[in-house]
Image (cartoon, rainbow, N blue to C red; front, side, top):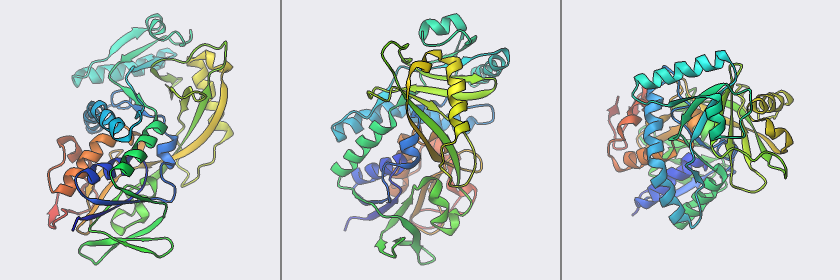
Length: 385
């Protein structure tokens, strides 16, 4: 009989892993009360390991660089399996600075990347504006990072949903209350209505809600709120940038990610706060994002504000995700990706597939081993470091 896998969480990480497992022959059920929602639905969709990483986060840079390398093949396979475009954008990224302090901070980042053998191109403000005419005169300089890509997160979710369906994955709109085990190995899950679903293995990919699903996950993942805006270009206004634009404005980070979907031409983000599971969009958050983005892209003042929303990133203790076997035999986790869930989806899915097959994970994933905070076991038993 085919082994049964329950995936708890129907976001980008859970669906990518479910698709991989189904292709490997697992009988997969994904449980989520609102699939394709949450942080995956809200996300900006940046695939930006270089411009997301700062000194001290070298392991995260290695993870992101390996995953972005896998993105073109992942997107092509997914598009073919889904019969629709997965939304990958390959125009690259520019990073803008508006003042001398911001330029100094970007120079520090560029120097750090040079020392790691990952050079970026430093550009003066005029040269940046030649690349992206939408940038305003307050931009004094910055970086060009052509290998930092982006993806339309909602096109990606549509493609993943179609691909898992085509692969025979069952997607059920149920909320899981707990992973069941007998003290040695997992037995399945119980939903909030008390209905039990049996499984030979369980993958917890429930984002910010993962910590409550099994005692070994308690306290390992926390919600980190981020507010995001969507803008629509209006006739007569400056066209949106073709590349992702990241910026430092008086030390505050802001980004603008172009979209192909009509009526949602630009995504602005993102605030960061820790207020539990609150997803209220605040006046202050909207004001700050618009103020800072307009300093960099003044033409957006003529755009329409069409959506304000907030999501909960799953934060970990050290900003690295948790990917690996943990606790009872048969329990696998893929959570705690923070702001990098979509970036790390291909690599995480490949790592989960390897774990389920009893094979080693890709080398960069070892730094994200779930057992770094708690004892982990393999799917076939035995302690793992």
